[in-house]
Length: 294
Image (cartoon, rainbow, N blue to C red; front, side):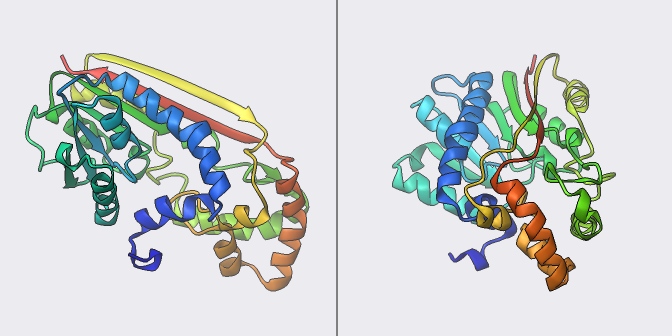
């Protein structure tokens, strides 16, 4: 299936999130995604002959990790994207693990296709940021878990770094071109409203509340906050062609929609040297929550 025929979720996960930069993808996998996977799975505590439901499985990072970590486990790949489920199913065949896999098209807040108390562990990674009905999702996680079942999730807490102060754009000081940058930022704000978008309508304290209300009694949460120079960007082209999430355009696309050629030239002339020399600040907050169903 070509990229243009895939849904937005598959397009982003398989193509747009790294701006077509294979080196950046390898770096992200090694430095960030694999450690997240391993931590989520460790908190899930999957054992031999148990079943894991990976909600919002995406490209299968957590699910395939579970199949490798526990060779007798069974994994249910669940996602709203049929394209991503097809992608994972194809990989499962290549890896010769299809006999240990099931594939379920479902949203996190409606897992009705999964029976009550049918799985031993539930995992998610960067899923709730796309779900408006977060409490319903936690209720569903609790429902499908067996007694003593474990929930393990990872979520970025985007409220920590967004929306940015007006003089900043992706952590870079754009004071001399603020009026131009405002046009680009306004587009992103319209697409994902800071006061109501699911990516921004919760923090780590809300995650604990959701888990408690769902019925979990034994809950743990770890919050990791970092303020540091931006991650290395291979080049300006990579920065231009990356999309922060499936629902927003790349910077190049946003500039083409909002700026005149002269404005785009001035915007690039100011921002490009800052990006390539990493003269900015990246702010991030990441939450791991794990809980047990009594």
